[in-house]
Image: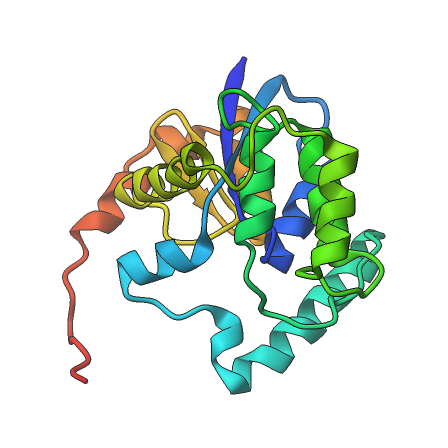
Length: 213
């Protein structure tokens, strides 16, 4: 049985859609999932990237696209009252719900739906307190241990080549994005393409031009 490491941040609508769609997209395959909450902003900073919602011309398109994708796939989805928002409280709460910092699907589902269903303020203190009371974390989400755990998880993910969410790690392969789910399925199903030269050959393509700031 293959193990999928699912890197996620609750601020990402694509991570939410991928989380909801994963069981259907991989139906019939034998696999397990480890959920790894990481701070998307930390990954972006490490790799020198901006988040999609930080580009004004892209931001509205992103929201239109995810809402369309949600209705296409039958996934309930409403934009939160404000986005992007600071997801640290949600990420730390997720880590605090498991001794190893790997929250189960039920915990992740509640956190994702806190953000992406109902259209409320995902960062509202009263809503966060109510969510914490429901989840009853085993450790203090605001403690130094959890804060360091999130930093370490994000740094480890960045060093492993994770540059965005959702990302999926299986064996030595990394898959990024909601639209990579069919590709992930192909690998898990034993598609012969992954045994060919194409996967590794792309690393040898030379850079033709470098943009200068």
